Length: 346
Image (tube, rainbow, N blue to C red):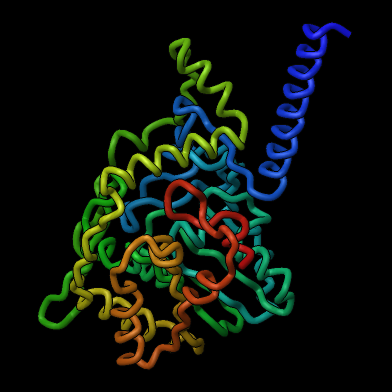
């Protein structure tokens, strides 16, 4: 065998070994730690008009029996709403079983995960003796959750109302415009809660349905799109961007300021009163911040302020942070702040 042939064989073996290693790594990512890539032209284009609609009191609500794909930077999922506009099963109305009601925002709505991956539907299988309702919607604050529950009717035995509290809820409660949409706002007037900003004005984005924009893009973008279809290469690209942020001092996050929780306390007090009148118990579960669980910030957890409120109001609360920190599993999508399928299961 000539030296030239021997060198060629060695090069071929190296190429085969590299390809084999790449296939094994890619398979691992796709099975155990998927990180798919979604082109910017199809991201988050099907929500307004298809899955959400304007509501004069809540600001927005789900489209009854709405069906559409929802594509984000992290995932592509199929969304279906029941006849009431909630991402929930269709309840038969018999009311034979005691009910558990969940109030919350995008975490409880199951944003970026499939229906069967939502923690509520996992819990539903574990608690077959209860009728579990999901009244959550993306972007809701405690104020909108209070309004929704106040209008919700259930003739059977209501046992628990679970308030899933997120780190942005206090700011949501203080705002009249959130997530590019106008919303209502409660104010405390003469020591009474007064709802302002209703009827909530509509915006043109609610009109008609939105379809994905399958743009053409440049040659460079096309090549990048093809390469990033690999979950492994997508992760490598993402980590390089994180390194650039770290190198530029981007992780030196400022301390999170202490927020005025006076309005949130009154909202929780009002909700607790309505729950008790219906013969049920209000429980608060804190959704831990991704910054806290991944130890990116040294700021005090937002839960500390709300735990004080729960103590003053006599509301039982549960902080999930330690469980997520100790798990060692990736509970959040790499981009954004939402739970992935693991986070919902945990």
